Length: 345
Ligand code: DON
Image 1 (cartoon, rainbow, N blue to C red):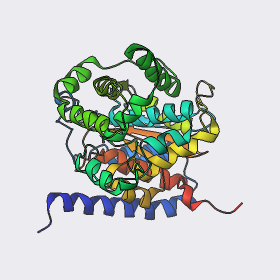
Image 2 (cartoon, rainbow, N blue to C red):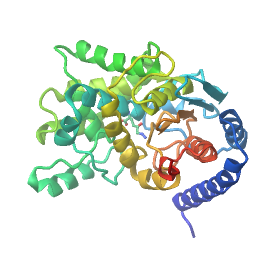
Image 3 (tube, rainbow, N blue to C red):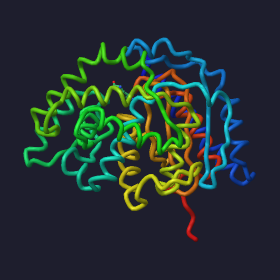
């Protein structure tokens, strides 16, 4: 008898296989970005699978019917369907931009040497993974990554600043530059997560004990919790993804947010660890660097072609939005977005 998880996996594999088959056909049919976005929206708007995250109480209260898709190309054109204005908390998608900030300010080696850039194959908040890596790392080589909680809290601790407020202003400012507008913390989410984040506090203390965090782990955990509570809509997330797709230049504001030479390092970690323990499966089917958050958002990047984001709160067992995964896979495959399938010039 298949388990619920097995059912979910089979449904996902079936949906992605169908999307890939459909994409092969539609490429010849010259699908436009707007047609691809509309088709995915209409196909999945009535899908009811999955469930909102509830280990952070505020997330359980978000409308599960919220569904918005936005795709932005390097020329700044926005293609969308559904609700692209309602904000959800960015959650783990913020991990990409804090990692990017450390890479931007301190170089690609900083993250590689202190945290590591290897997938753990474990859940995003696994403590066993920290211990397992510690055993592997008898040599002293860190084998974590900044997209799981232990690595993300460590990355937040690496952002420099004389006070907590100074560090925070840099973190939110960098997110603002990627989104092209001033973002704000959703205070109800911040309070809810701060009241219930004892596991992350334990991870923070452990990361100090093991040398990934150099001092003041409570500050790192608090700033990490704040960054996860930043409010974003589907258009904000797509703009952030499109900035990565356009070598660090925001295609809406025109601002060069990040050094182009450093963007591939960010995309590489997204490719190997962006959807947690389902990252391999996702990459196998789409070839897209991506990142999910338990607020229901997923961003994905087709370098040089587009950035895309979907917001839809119900998640699968791995913690990834179900409608977002399916819609992005369909749209990207319909538009030839898989970078691993590029044709010779
Ligand atoms: O640390 C946490 O539990 C959340 N603030 C973020 C988790 C998250 O988004 C993981 N995502 N898939």
